[in-house]
Image (cartoon, rainbow, N blue to C red; front, side):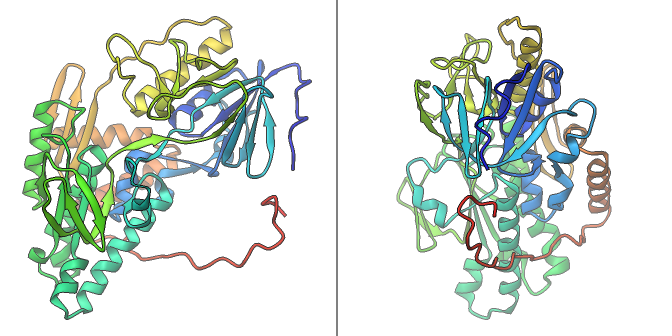
Length: 436
């Protein structure tokens, strides 16, 4: 299939949006479909909710509860008229105004890059073969299956050393995701293990979180950092600050100070890097982290009719000389601003409005830095639940998540602790273009 000749002659300008995350989806919602032909390209056929990936990994939620099909979303009023085309964008040709996926080539008049980020292993690419990550729904499912399989294997092994390896979990990175998955494992240790795995003593399950800075949640207030560490200690999580993982070989974690310990299952949440593309023609110079440098209107510097939004955009300002934070609110606000400006044909500089940040550690345990107040404990936890609940796409998903959370709060047992590893696919012979 080839779309190179598609709609260049159309009366409407064609805007191609790469990525259907927070930025991409809000962008296509707000664009004027009467003025523009809008095409959304994403490797998955669904939008997912990254802040809750850790709940999939810890068996707290079902993957379908935080995922929503693009094509179903396209039937709604604000998105109606948008074309969705599945494919992972591999090449951007700025001179020919063309993007290529593994399936097709798509021409554009204007391009919006909102592809987001992926895991950053900081120059250690071999780590991808040995650590677990939770940057996508499939990665979170793989992490969940491994956690549960280790629990099951630990109940039947009599080898003390092997049992110790199976029941050790090491989280690398003390940001929101690291804190949240460590807290979820801590709740499993404190509450779930005695109920569902009575042959395993909670003292046998070891959870370690390693952070290179002197506090957790480095982008949040010091008060929130201290509270998060206190909550993790309450859940029997061993917090190691001012430590970097130097290497991870044969199951052994080596820290920067030379100390070593058996890492067991290592969950990597230490950093992100931009999605990469093969760029051709007179394109932009990316910054050190691989982000597209943009001006105050979200236009990519060094490229014509190209814009970048969200985590993949580098927009420095007086208040944020290192660029805006890689948060969902930045992506959403940029997308709505750019869509409004494109609809009008007039451009004004974007101004980010900080609405705060939050992280949850466990039941009744959360921290929230809001514009005019700081919350912790139960009220922060309720605020965190409400904000995340209203942000999930689809009324069915909202209701499902709410019921699941209420049920989990009243009764710890859940039907979601299931190991469902996929079967091997038949060979897809004869599919040179990936479609036939």
